[in-house]
Length: 326
Image (cartoon, rainbow, N blue to C red; front, side):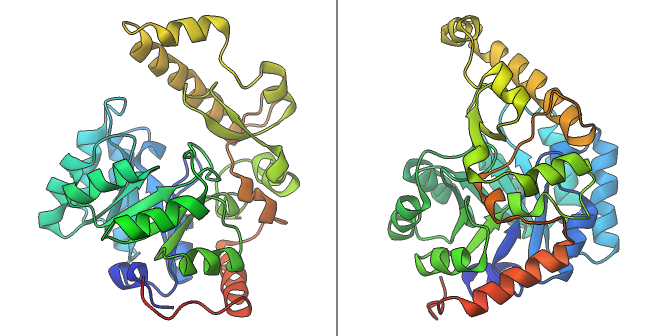
């Protein structure tokens, strides 16, 4: 399978195992790369810079190529500068930027030959990152896990392909080979898939979290503002139903106050991340599990190698991919 993404990263299949907060780890990336795809890890999965640097060195020492790192590039990430320096010093293959302007990342990485892919949710921001020199766009659609975009892939991908001159990678809602074929034929050069890898054997999260991915489907995914102040997709567990998914009247008033809105969102995000972390590793009645609608495609807890193998079989069995390289 040759697309612009396989050519850029020198991989067999145009699939990125998406960076997943709390879930992604070095073992998962290693298995992804060995299976012919690539993977990325959020830098924020590591509590300290020394732990982050150790993970980068581990991946480089085992010859894990290519792999990527996801960086939050807005002011909420106080470790951003140190994380970027570590990525450059350890020569990661690509960086995925989220939630802010990627300019400083692009400017720092371009001279070093490190590719920069940027999360966007619409054409306006796609044009901006293209003008800044991004190597590719990750188009986050309304079926994505975590912080989803406002548009369906069926509208977003053709629009970006038509209006942008750099490669477009689709993120959200894809869980099988047929879906990959469809999105490639719509003009994307690859896919970023997260949720179908959450229930893999290599993930360090709790068995309860993995089993929840197996047991729940698309209809069980809801958007909540309780985690970061921005709508985020989670499994609709009994605890989520109990606390609700909408901001309270007090949170609404605070978020409308220009003076304290920024600090309120930071506090909400801090509390939300603590809640997610506790749920991911220790099951309790207060479970808050992040996942996307593509959990519909997960039927068992399996190794990454098995997940990728099934995807490739499904790709070969489904409709033929357009032979033009996107």
